[in-house]
Image (cartoon, rainbow, N blue to C red; front, side, top):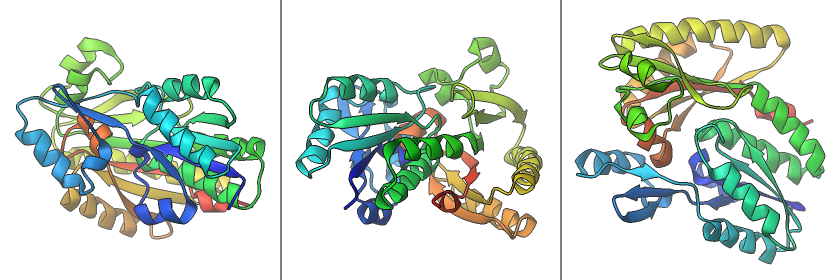
Length: 295
């Protein structure tokens, strides 16, 4: 067992076998339908959430984990014998989870918790937690782990397209104001999260159809590939989707032909993030392969 516990929130969507292998602790995020508070673990099969969202008379909202939920995980970490922990959260640019964790950690006794803002979500945050876990298992101290997390965060990006802007409009997670939103109705908005800025969701382009969105993302990602190759940063790319596996598979197959040297994997846009993107969103989430940052 390493001397540093690794904690993340459930929106990192790390595969269950990797959570178990690395003994990563999870704070389960709340998803709220009307007056009923659920947690992401309610939907172990991701499409079940989107079916419930589509059939519900009340559309879901989200909130940061409660102090009690965070403290319960800290209690378990301490009971397991740890004195130090690193908690990786989804971006503070569109969630209060980071601030809630920082506040709770400051008041918590007998456990030194370092809260890390991933400035992204889904497996982008998950990769940061996995890097931290690997480094902790190899005996690296907290300061060195945080330095490498910074490098990984700086080399992480995402481009994605949503089927409709209405959910981001409803939940208020799109930066840019109502004028921008009005210009994106009835089309396919192309979005990014800039991990070197505030980690907010920004609209950068639009397309009439998903095919047009793919063409834009393909061209933009091609420039990213060239930059990473020039800098000697091996890429790991996750094709993420909100219950749109056919389109995600199509994008993956096309990408493997264009860039056969890159590792492509599948990933999900789970319930907490799906509340804001809605069903059918698809995107490329990339980073330097964290496995190359461990030595």
